[in-house]
Image (cartoon, rainbow, N blue to C red; front, top):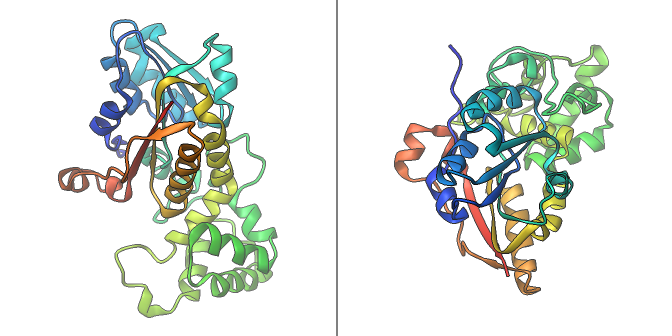
Length: 296
């Protein structure tokens, strides 16, 4: 039996978004529909939720979850950077709230063929959207030593970036690195053994760096931070959950810059984090940080 994806910080998101009947809200990272279903409950009987998701498998799951809500939910297979175009296609001028959960789903991790898992053997893919034309294997086997080191350091904050990049280049000279476990073995050989026995798998940061690069996650986040507030009504709110410091820093800095320009007001002076109870029941929530801003 597969893992069930449990949405993070649901009550906190709903409180900050202020979901109300007749409201129009965007879930820009629909996933399996966990947060969206809660939005639909709280905006009954006539609120509209626009779901944006680029993962085809997640959309199939969301359609099943959200089927009871009928035409109160509209789903688009898009990257959230296209949110303004989606709103225009819905013939809306602006919305009451926008929500983004920047994490990736348990549903993706548990499918070995998607290439996200550190534990299961699978092709080194890591694409959130199968329409993306390059995989993690392409990066690992084609980038130069310096390019690999840069990605590992900047996108994974990996202290052993140079050693890992060198080990990857040496290994691929013998044979291409095409699976998740083949890459993990290379990373483990590169990192000193005394650092293997920690709570987090030694290859975690390498996998994170490659996933971010394949899907252009930071570039996409920068774009939506720059344009997203324009799609809000005055008084509308944007809520963003991030799971690592690279994302959280971008959100924090963008919100601060926009507040200085008097475009938005920061609602959460400090990030909202999960309760101890939520961290215990949903370990995925441990590193979650929620920030919220309101258009002025």
